[in-house]
Length: 480
Image (cartoon, rainbow, N blue to C red):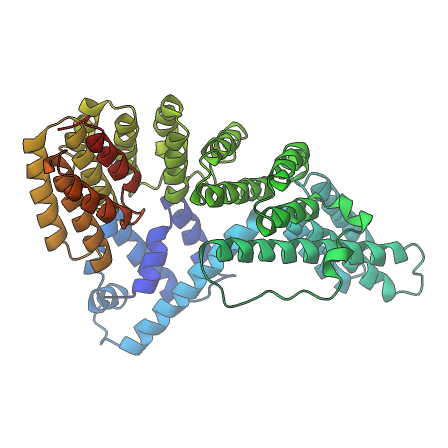
């Protein structure tokens, strides 16, 4: 293998990005090594023919393309590969900086201090003021940029004899630095609270004495993110006091235009985490509140980020929307937004989640139509699809098909080398329980009680609620 680190980096870039990288690599200002440029051309040409041809890019082949007739020198080739990797990483940083006009202007403001160019400095600071005025919301990045602007002006003034009018710049720099620190500190604390809500944490986050009282200074009303983060912390610190959550939603609705899109998006996700905790406590009302948050995100166009929707977010939205009984909305959501999922899992996710909706709608023929003949490349979707099919055949009283699927599912679990032992054990237990449901006699009270105990010990990673519901139907005499 040539260099997995470099090849995976190049392979992650789109064709337009690699076109820009070529210009970057061939720029004599950025790269004076012609051999590195030629190495990039060799690798790029191969990757363009077929991304999976990386196996043919072995060291001797690449060396021969670079230096025909010259004895192979592994140390020299490794140095070229390392230099190209570093150059590609510099390109990624340059691409990111090019999208941040405000940071670039602030850097220019600082760079111009070396020269006595008042007109250039004035023009740059007008640009900074315009970009700050146009900035989409008072995020922590906004306050940090304000701090940098005012600090640059103050430090420049402190080197001159005349400093009149610049003291307020120091005060402004101090205020925005405080806003940056406080908002960032609160955000870290929220992340810790969320982590603690789902996992045991041995660490505590320390705060300086008087921190919480200091936050109540009216000056910080100008930083809406601080006030929102305060309310979020109250929601999780006093989770049983639902008043805080209602007030949080009111503040988000009132202040949404003052927040950066990324901050508003994150606040909605945090509010959804609160709903998830309440659902896990057994309060099913929060399925509906969770769903309303999802619908608000969709209506505000907050869901798509960098032209994609994370797979976990998509899956959670489907699960919650179905739990809230919003079957038609969920089906439309899948059809509209599945195209924004990563290409690797897009079709698997679309087919599986549509089948999931049809199962909730008790449209079992469509479930089978979706899942029966589909080969899933992702083992997670394969397991999920087989689980839904098991339940579908049971609901339809298709016991021959159910028996056949139970056996093929069992063989699939035994032969698969990717699935963990614990997960295999859980699925083996699940198919055993389904088989028992299909064969147990309603009159055998002892067997029913033993089955109930087994189901009660089942992890919620499996369809535990469905198992309990089906068991209740048998006990009530609604099934054979």
